[in-house]
Image (cartoon, rainbow, N blue to C red; front, top):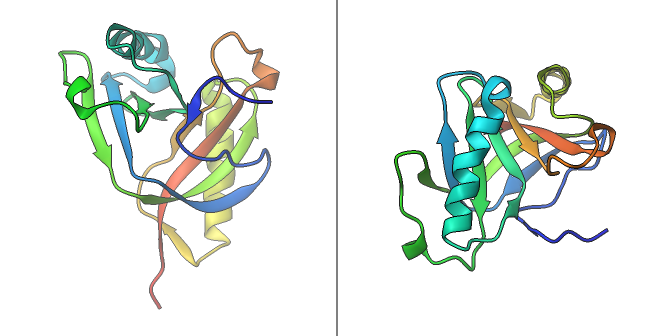
Length: 165
């Protein structure tokens, strides 16, 4: 099944654990002092208005820090840096390549589902001492709001680094 959206990186298969390098990226962000799952609709609107007003195509996935809540949209490589200016509600970020442990999941974008997957990924990391966590779990959401929950795909990412011996 093809997507109408450009993908920032490849999906992790459902039920699979992997460590993957995410490519360098440009992102825009909207944030709140509240938890992500309490405010995700309010976080989405400023980002959507931002890309719509600048005629920037939607890119997948949408990434989220959970507490406090931050929603990130990836910006495609074909968008000029001149089109990306911070506003009162949207900040612009550049990220270098980064290494993450990832778990692919199917299900609704609910706090309970995220927490369950994050716990599984943390437990997997403890059994794989080659890598150590260097940050908090983030949500990576692949589908829009009109896809039924049982069809939705998401990932949980934990930033990691190789353990030096």
